[in-house]
Amino acid sequence: MSTPPIPYKHTELTFQVMVDASPNALILVNKEGKIVYTNAFAEKLFQYQRVEIIGQKIEVLMPARFEKYHPGLVKSFFTSPEFRRMGEGRELFALKKDKTEFPVEIGLNPIVTVDGTLVLATIMDITERKKAEERFRLVVESAPNAMVLVDKKGIIKLVNSRTEKLFRYRREELLEQKIEILIPKEVRENHPKYRKEFSKNPEVRSMGAGRDLYAVDRDNNRFPVEIGLNPIETFEGKMVLASIIDITERKKAEEISANYTKKLENKNKELEQFTFIASHDLLEPLKSISGLTEILTEGYYEKFDEEGQNSLSFLNESTERMKELITALLNYSRLGQKSTIEKVDCTELLEEIKVDLASSIAQMNVNLKIESLPEVWGYKTELRLLFQNLISNAIKFRKKDKNPNITVSSQKINQIWQFAVEDDGIGMDMKFANKIFTIFQQLNPKNEYQGTGIGLSHCKKIVALHDGDIWVTSQLNEGSTFYFTINTKPQKS
Amino acid sequence: MKKIRGLDCIILIDDDKITNFINKKVINRADIDVTIKINSSVPEALNYLKGMSKQPVEEFPRPGIIFLDVNMPGMDGWDFIDEYKKLPHEQKKKIVIAMLTTSINPDDEYMANDIPEINIFLKKPLTVQKLEETIYTYFPC
Image 1: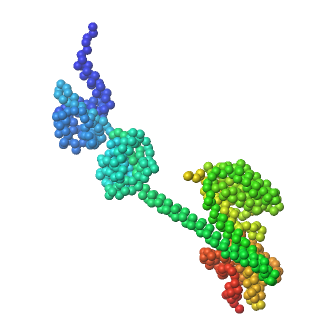
Image 2 (image 1 turned 180 degrees about the vertical axis):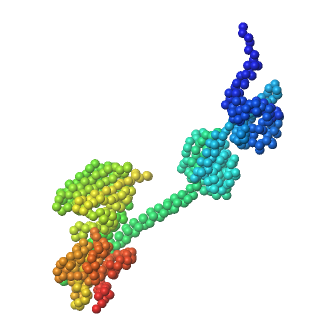
């Protein structure tokens, strides 16, 4: 049999090895507050040799400001010794031999030995953690939004100066308060419930999506806010960093803009109504003039001399032209008024137009090429008028000495259909590119090219009804290409 | 028929033949001995002015007054003024430009007032009275 081990010796040795190998500073202190033992790490941390420090008062390892009342604390610890963290809620500092201070966290552990009760202090250097915290604090402080850090119980742990300004509280009035003091009364009650739900499934998100959020300041003023929530892990557990933006100004701007849009819509409706009524009422006396001219022409033409006869036919011409213009205006104001958005097959639509224009296509030997065209959402009657106007124009402004070639094509650009009607006609100077879309504006003399000058205004209005744009590229004597986009969404109903 | 010194010719620039017919009639009724030249577009009128010196004066008399329509297809009255400004001084000397318009937009008149080339701004229709006032103002005997 071998010699039995000596249990006490062995345990003591093991204890010493363990303590020395610990990555924390360990210091054993007796009832008198004197150091009885330090481990290797403590030597390193405090820069003392073990022999220099053992037997010294523990206060040598503290900044001078703690010296006065620390002995009292030691005494009270020994009256009810139990494991606890030291200085809960306060910032603790330790002192190296060279008198530099550093932040620490200390755990206290009573140990009963043959020499009586001792306390084992575990000291952790938290300089790096403090630095990280300070960096975090600086980031939060310099954020352009109000930032509030809340722990899992809903207690405010950190605010920045934007928060002070926004909520009119001083920082110390907010810290350690429930976050609910910043929330309007009517939602305050339910808020803890929301908080719990969030902490169950924390993720970066904006708060109260789809709802209008409000906050209250110190003077109980409500104001609209937008809040972003960021769950973060800290040394003190899971927390939520809320970023709060005051959107009062934005809301105001939105309201103004909405009102303005509404007004504009009304005005626009009024204007269309006005055009409709005005042109309608203008037609009445015009029809009378037309009738009277007819009476004069039929009953008295022979009684006039040449100049009188000329005047009479000019009178008739002017009346007819005015009728055309007013009718065009009337039609313009009616565009899109009674239509609904439907799915329109443009290929089918163009086939119909081909039939409608068959006689002029045959007469002018038009080579009308229709490439593959999509289905779009739109007002069918108006779209038909749009294509028909553009193709009729292309035929009308053909070159006199050759058969016109016209191509209708389409392509999808950024999810929007763009159409093109290309011709090889007389073209135009691009300086008139905008003028042609203005109502009653014409580029060519009336005696050469008949028309009211409203066709392209119609087109422009129709394209606008489809949330699109219309434009032209052209070169004099080379032909024109009219482009337009259709961007209508299916109607919600 | 009276002959006005410096007023041998009046040019009417208007694309509308009926307006030209009426204006010609008004000038005739004012009983003035003057040649009336009708240009139904701006380029036509500019060609007339540029070609004057190279052509026999009987066929291309120098205008004393130009009645200029504003709203015309292609180049309009304002475009005419822009081109007219570029003409050599010799060709513009002693020409009175009367802008004649149906426009009820007062901005047109303000704009016309700011353009020194436009001597007078008249509203259609041209009448004998408007014509005579223009002549008394710019061609006093």
